Amino acid sequence: MADIAVTPEHLGHSYLENTGKRKGIAAWIFSTDHKRIGILYLISLFTFFSVGVILGILMRLEMLQPGGKLFNAQDYNALFTLHGVIMIFLFVIPGIPATLGNFFLPIQIGAKDVAFPRLNLLSWWLYVTGAIVILLSLFQHGLPDTGWTFYVPYSIRTGTDVTMAVFGVFILGFSSILTGLNFITTIHRMRAPGMTFFKMPLFVWALYATAWVQVIATPVLAITLLLIIIERVFSVGIFDPSKGGDPVLYQHLFWIYSHPAVYIMILPPMGAVSEIITTFSHRTVFGYKAIAMSSLAIAFIGYLVWGHHMFVGGISETAQFVFSLLTFLVAVPSGIKVFNWVATMYKGSIDLQPPFLYVMAFIFLFSIGGLTGLVLGSLATDVHVTATYFVVGHFHYIIFGGGVFIFFGALHYWLPKMFGRMYNKKVANWALAILFIGFNMLYFPMLVMGYEGMPRRYFTYLPQFETWQRISVVGSWILVAGLIIMLTNLIRGVFKGEKVGNNPWGGTTLEWTTSSPPPPENFEEIPVVTHEPYYHPEAAN
Picture 1 (spheres, helix red, strand yellow):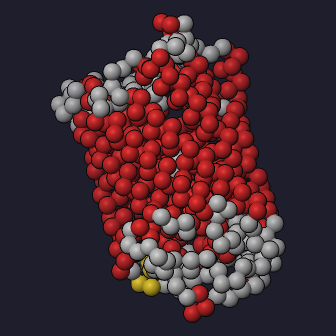
Picture 2: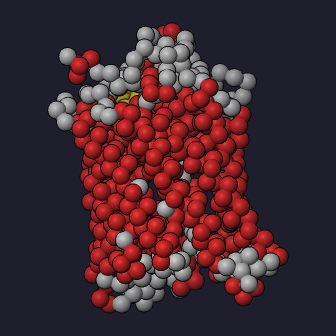
Picture 3: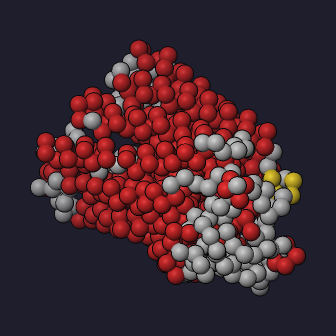
């Protein structure tokens, strides 16, 4: 992609070494190096992810038999609230953008850092501050029990400390907005010489589309959450129907942000899929411009479909029809991506490495998530399965089976570049197989139970669902076993893995032209880009 040849001898110290005035942990938590900030996010995210997984396991254990054996209804409400808040706001939404995006976006466009390094560090500090505030809510007036959506009127009437939890999420919103602003400015102002917009890697395009969603949609959530706090403190009657407020207004405001937020969760993984498929197919990506524009199209249409969350919430028939139509339309740019990925693999020299196998798992799981989404997008069937386990299963197939599986796959793809060491590939493949089996055992029964009428958020159930519930519980154990194996293998690879060269996968984008791990300023000289990012000479011959 660029006329440069960089070796470790040219580059001097790695960013992993303490070369400044500060030493130890202070050299990390006060660093403005985008790579160190990306790793700080990575450590923070997986810390909270572990907590969220534990809460999820406790919820599943309650479902091992009916009757509320482990928790009462109030405690169960608190469990799924904390599980949702932690997984959505502290793991999935920051996810790839804050970690791998922070690390690789500047390198992929040939920049030395992001546009605003100090603002980047502030984003991480705001993330940590928001997380601490949420955790403090656990020790005030009881665990929040509203669900992660904080639906009114219950969230303004419950005696638990919803105010503190909502304020924590409010702070997290600023972290997301600042990250988005930083990425947009970096992409517009700091591309290497010769890198036009249509010479940017598709991962950068996905982060660019995501950043606009973060900047435009997140303030709506911030205002909405602030209104909950005002409502609880001053009882002004914005949402409370007993005071003349409108609870459906809250749903509109919340989902105007939260449905575009789904694409904050899924667009960066889609960008990573494009990188992984072209690398391991050894082919130039098919339909580069179509994939790039589809990222922007998904982000744009994503603003227009929030009403499908409220088909049974009291909106008009005209609104139901319009939102149902728009929900089906958003599948078009997603389909463009999938067809172009398949075309890229066609007649390619495919190398079945762990990152590529994660992509194959993603395509299967995300397809199930997408097809079940059509069931929820259709008015007649949505009425039947709304507020059932079907929604829970669909949501996890999209977010976990789609976004999180590719997060894992992208980590397997870029970890050797980040740390200069390779994990055990055989263990990685076994971990993926266990994850795949456990995931489907855990969530596919939820689709069946939901179709048969099992409501979500219940701490007990009718005897007719016991077999499916037990299969789901056993699946959760298998899934956690796969997670432990995968993370242990990656951590061991970081510290004890075999050292690798600059380009262990044969990638063609700029990050593979610098050393592993990259130096503090990424390149000894700013590269000059001369051709498109996925040029494979062997494929062209």
